[in-house]
Amino acid sequence: MNCKPFALAALFLLTCSDLLAQAGSGVYVGGHIRRERPKTVTNLKESGFTYVILFDVTVEADGTLTTDGETICKNGQYVFANEQPYYIEDVKALKTWPTSIERIEICIGGWGNESYDCIRTLIERDSTDSNSILYRNFQALKQAIPEIDAVNNDDEHCYHAETAVKFHTMMYDLGYKTTVAPYTNKNFWHSLVNGLNRNRSGACDRVLIQCYDGGANNNPSDWHLGNLPVHAGRTNYQTDMATSVSQMQTWRDNNGVVGGFVWVYNDETWKLNQWAAAMNRVFPTRQVDEPAVTCYTQSSFGGDATVLPVGRFSKGELAVYGLADKTIQSMKINPGYKVTVYYSTDLSGSTLMEWNGGQELERLGTWSRRISSLEIEMEETDGIETLHDSTASPSDDYYDLQGRKLSNGKSSNSQMKKGLYIKNGKKIVINTLSRSLW
Image (tube, rainbow, N blue to C red; front, side, top):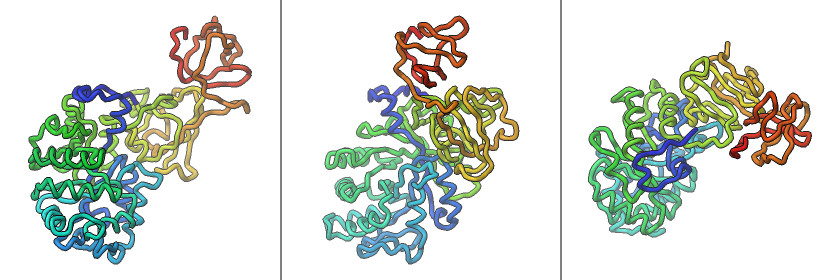
């Protein structure tokens, strides 16, 4: 997938690879993930979102960590298993193949949540050393579920920068990065981000600006705090997907936004995979250096085109590349590769179809709009090893597959380009031909 230039991103002199690393699509996930498990966990793994934010963890006045009235950690011990025996297993599963999820965060805060007032009081009383209850409870959570990567600060009440910096410095030392989710009070967030990253370089690595509800009038251009990458958010319940994705594209092109998120997954009627795939087309996280297959969402190579490299792609992983489930209707397979497609979401089962390289499939017959996962491999032909070759030289002897010698990239009947050739008795795949003579 090509990386498009973003208008404001040029201000930060970001390379394409920088943008890909900073991009992503995320979703806040409510208590629904526990109430409707394991279906909700599977749906998230297959969604195509690259990060999830678990909403929420509440800090009580005595430092106890709770969610929805249930206790997570108390007195330095993880006790959530007493009420939610599958929670550790489920959170770990979010990052276990087949999945699209690469990062997990916990959210602290939200409207009406007084966690940061409690955090302020506890820090002013006990500090943040290893004996403090905040340290011990968050350490217990990290030890129980090390897959949690970061804490998302959604403070909407306290706004006390000094203790917020101390808290997130402690969290970084425990292994949690920080993201911030502001909708107002820019001066506070500026102080928090800059103060934290002075204490621990890179501790805060992303701004998730709320452009809904109280932040509906926010301009993402105003929220480039500390030159951090900005992700801008919408709500799935206030508008349709096409309108939200179009707005995200405008933010990308005009406001320096490199990623997007949505609030909040608490409803099984919401089509996560379709949303994530559409958002990932706006904010790609993958760069394909050696294209193997191009998939199209309409027959005769129409609709959206998605380029894929060699690899195994579950339902969720296809959506990371911008390809929603069961939307493939035509396909071009480059010479030297083969594709195996599946009805299942995880490359399992006996129902599969294989196509060899060099084919242009205008229609997929019974497989049209039924593919949920696929695998792309290098072809091996006639028992001869198939090799990648990006060192083509005019002094080498190349032959096309009909045995005709190519001179300076040409023969009387063929033009040398990316594809299968014979060199020194072996069939090779040429994927990179940058020399002008070709």
